[in-house]
Length: 362
Image 1 (cartoon, rainbow, N blue to C red):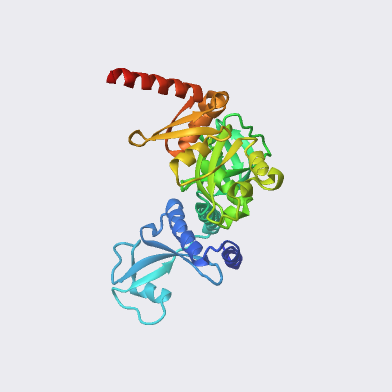
Image 2 (cartoon, helix red, strand yellow):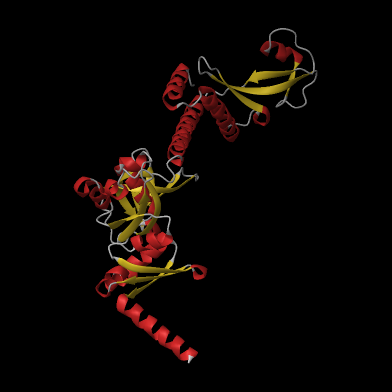
C-alpha cells in the first residue's frame, strides 16, 4: 500500500514542477475509483477512495445507509454494525463510510498512482512549453536541426521540438543535422500530443527580426523599418528611414565595413539584401526601390496605381533584374505596379505620340 514516500515525492514535484500536491492526489483518487471498479465487485456502485495527505495511506470506502433490516448489502448496514465503524451516536437513516480496502489493492494503487503522476508531470511540461513559446509567436528563436520526417524538418529549440514544414523552407537552403539556425515562429497551437510549434525560414519578418537583433539603432527605435519585400533565398529589399537627420539609416544597417549586413546575409545563407531609403514621396521612393539601378524619370498613373520608370539604356536589364526580380521586389516594396523603359524607348514613344497629336490637329 502507498505510504508517506508518495507524499514526499508529491512535495518535491510541487516544488520543482509547480504542480499542486492536492491536484495530483485528487487525480489519483479519481483514477483509483476506476481501477477499483474494474478489478473488484464489493461496493463498487458507491465506492470512494481516500488518501491521507500526511501518511499517504490509501483506503477504499463504501458509503452505506443505516437501516433496521438489510435488503441491499452493497449499500446498506444495520445499526449494530454501523456502531462498529462510526464513533458517537448512530441512528437509522445515517450515511456512514465503511472501509473495504482489499489486501491486494496496494499493488494496483501504487501502479495507478505512478501513471497519474507521470501524466500530470507531462501535462505540466506541455503547459509550460505552450506558455513559453506562445509569447514567441512573430519572433525569432534559435534552433538546431535534428532530423527529417517525411518532408518536415524537426528543430530542437532546447526546451521543445518544433516543425519546419515544406512551405516554410527556403528552396536551395540546406538543413543538415546539427546545423544551428534562426527561425521565425509562425504559430503555436495546442494538440493532444502537446504544443505544436510551426517555424519559418521564408517569412519576411524573419528578415525584420534579424535586423532588429543586429542593428542597435533599429532595436532602439532610431531607425525604422518601413517596408520589406522578400523572395526567400534569393533577394530581399528593405526600406528604412530615420527622423534624426544626423543618423544614417542605411549606413547603420550596413555597419562598419559591412559587418552587420554580412552577419544577416550569413544567417540567410547569402541571400542578397538591398537596403533602400524610404521616402514619403512616391516618386522618390519608387526611384530608390530600383537600387542599384539609377532612375532618370518616374511618372505616376494614380488611378491605375502604376508607375512608369525611365532608366539609361545600359541600365535597363539591371533595373529589371534577372527574370524580372529587381522590378518585382520593387513593386512589392512600394505597392505600385512598375513599368520600366529605357531612355531611348521612352523618347521613341514620346516622339510617336507627338507625331500622332500633330496629325490629329492638321
